[in-house]
Length: 446
Image (cartoon, rainbow, N blue to C red; front, side):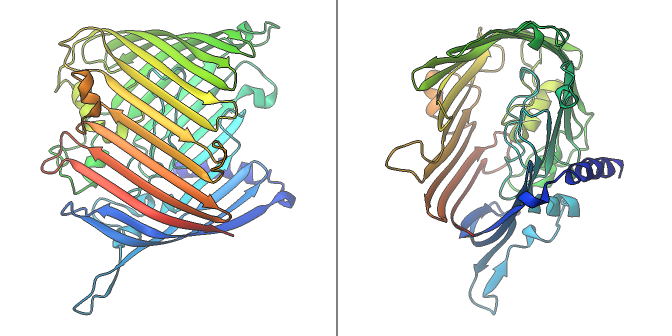
């Protein structure tokens, strides 16, 4: 109750600042076909989609709803028409808040990077500090079957004219408050007239997973051997970090940074550098890290695939699976166009030595915004490919231990046609470890 009162208080304060004269409203209707993995049997079933998505914007405030009905024609025995009950009727371990809060697709005030920023709903890129504890965390990995309603809240002292620090917070699911994280940072030289040193940051981060078995206890298929186990002790991770910008020029940005992190009395540290090099119309994105960590320490514990690999991570954290401490590395390379219309980034990380019990991980993302390609003004695309524990280079092309997500949009006037595909492999699943969902949708905006 206290948590709900706190969120309502923040929201009420922001609503009181709305410039109602700038209110803009709109609605879109979605029609399509979506496939789901049936919870009890694991069978893939296709449903028709009818969605109503009203939205409004007033100044920095924006609100969008996502009201979907999935139905299918079954035929025979008088059962000709069926609505997917899981969308509107709480079943099994699902409670009312978990089911109905995600009908609010987003509720935002400001943008990431503003002095005051609040976002409620789904998100895909939550990062705290340098990312050695949490980087690109997403609460969207179980959509469309189980969307989550999370919260991001950032407050920089610059909002009140003070350049000395701020806070960043993440809540993965406000209906469960399972994954919670926050970072407090200061700019010790913020009041000095020093172009770069005044932006020096020193921060402290605390991240907690109160229920590592949360998602496997919610799903019925694929079965997970840990689904029936009692809730274990929480994961508690904390650390300190610093970041120093060295170059902030038109064609070159360069920063150095470092972290020291504690995971259940196991230590890990990192020093790194990264930035952007402008070369004509493109920006070259680069970064590298050296990592040193003790046995069973996991760098970037809360990463972009965390909710799908939550039990695997906890087995290492809890000591059920042994991973040898060692010296590790991370390399990142990519490019983006001047207006971020085209962006590609590949990140690879792992240990320098073999025999640690874990192999390198690879993640690649590609984003194409509308208008990025001349001649195809209505085309947009987003895709992510992740593969884990690579034993040899050829494993990059193997489907096991992978997550793949693709969304292709084609716009013509107010009409958008979208093709969505997600492929997931669960190495701990009992039975079929594959989950594949796909959909084809036409959206008409008014």
